[in-house]
Amino acid sequence: MTPIGEELLFRGVVTTGLLRYGPVIATVGSAVISALLHGINVVLPAALVVGIITAELRRRSDSVWPGVAVHAFNNSITVIAHALIPGVVS
Image 1 (tube, rainbow, N blue to C red):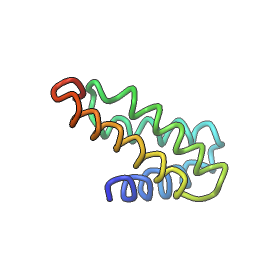
Image 2: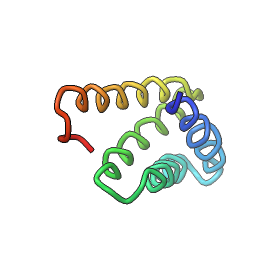
Image 3: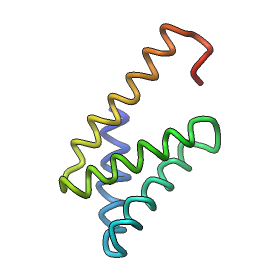
Image 4: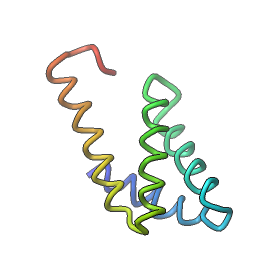
């Protein structure tokens, strides 16, 4: 459920709102905002990259759903890594 909520907020609302300033501002701006809200920690670089990818998917497809799929896949990799290698992925 988290990928749906986050993508609806950050890509559906923030990216859409920032598109009036151009595609680069919309993509990078929404990615930075979402990454920072994940916290300034080890997750920030990955959150920034996933944010850029999902924002660009939203912009090109005019839909949040491709980003939801990427976000869910990314989260599932983390969950699997935690299960297989406890303590390695934070």
